[in-house]
Length: 110
Length: 117
Image (cartoon, one colour):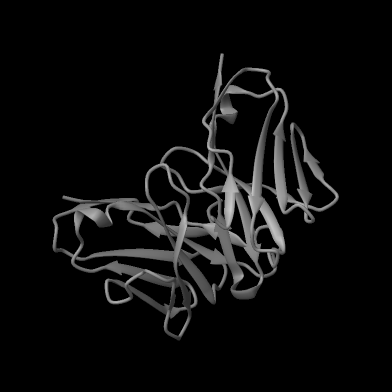
């Protein structure tokens, strides 16, 4: 079983749609969680951290459920520029490792 | 602006040659740097953790004699792919840890796309 597992995708949605990405992690020792965005052939860039209480940044909402070891990302009113691969990431404080999910590709069409 | 600079961004080499990739932290000292590899349509896989002044820690399945890591200073780590083969063709990314920035523990270089012919 992969340590961080995401929806396989790809997600093809029209502009303005709401899209949700799901992610599960297997290591209960994971202490911090993030969503990164990766454009084709580029390095990953931090989109947002994920807090237990849930957090929102504009059109993006992240949720964390530690009991279920589940993380989600909701994108509202999707834009063409949101097209990218979204990576769910767990951070293990011990050793300072970031464990990446395989990514979910999003394609927003006009 | 970029806080981690990686060079070169792209390299094409012949099978059997060695390739060195540099990762520099800009405006901060990085005691720890990480090297990742990403194959097409796959996630980033941690290869090794590079600690300044000491030997790198390699992940299971990564050949330390093939992927030489040197972290001689607080601002520079290098990854050398020795005797590269076509199966080593991949996207290699370094990152540096900034402990003070808890919300974003790692800053990534822009990556190096290696193609071995």
